[in-house]
Length: 316
Ligand code: ATP
Ligand code: MG
Image 1 (spheres, rainbow, N blue to C red):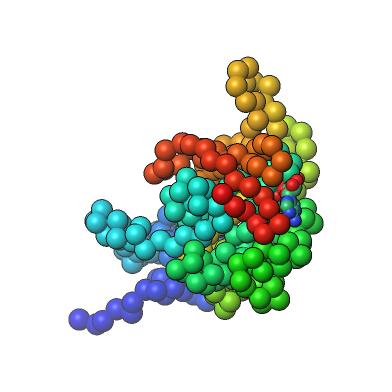
Image 2 (image 1 turned 120 degrees about the horizontal axis):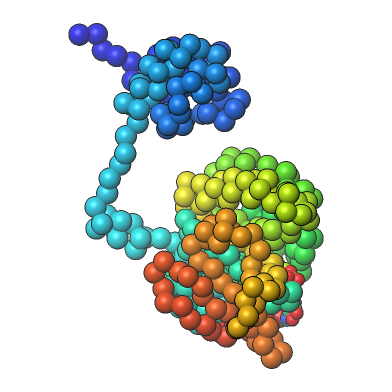
């Protein structure tokens, strides 16, 4: 029996030549998984092949892709290895289960001056620490939509951590983005940068500011949420693939629908609500104190703690 060529790339599929493959890649169909889940008529159109050929290609893609099952124990062992970044405050680390988790998205929302950006700065320094000191020995991609990145704060926090400030800053890849398209593209093109530089933290500060400014009115909401969804999926994909932590800040609005209790609601609707594994609600207290509340975590009880914003960074 003739040995069949192993199907690894989309051009290995029957009926898909180099031309069809590049047509498919141009519309984002770049993996066997994607072909395997496509209706044949869509594949036919996208690749410029007949529906019959497309049916065969989809079937071959389905046969070549596998679903990998794991036992609960294996997941448990893997979970024990998950990297965590210290937030600088022991109480906050404890609240979120030992620090900010790699492979996941953490969102902090709250009003102005509630400490969202400051917590981001702290993470930028702490991720660089050795593992035994609460870091991941990694670098940072900082996507700034509001021009609130302050190198001098990084320097102060680094000094307090015993890290050379120049070195700390040189480990941060900073991008100022002005439009949602730039924001999305920065994430889309980050794979190489991440891989080559051992990036272990992506900060997007703020996630929603540009989306909020660009898509105004009810009519634009559908388009906004669609783009946002794609962007979040990419970020989650980067978190999974490179086992890095994603930290997003988010703004709030007053929800007039909430009659009792705190009407402060993060923006971004359901899409944002489902994006983050861990959501933190930050609010101002007296002087340098801030209250951090953990909202719907998959494995930690809801709770609150108090942190302080100091010159040296976040403290308990
Ligand atoms: P926004 O929604 O406006 O972006 P934010 O939640 O990101 O707000 P931060 O910038 O994180 O707010 O917090 C600002 C607060 O941090 C200031 O009110 C100030 O109290 C505190 N802060 C900033 N720099 C220092 C410093 N060097 N020493 C102590 N506290 C500082
Ligand atoms: Mg801020």
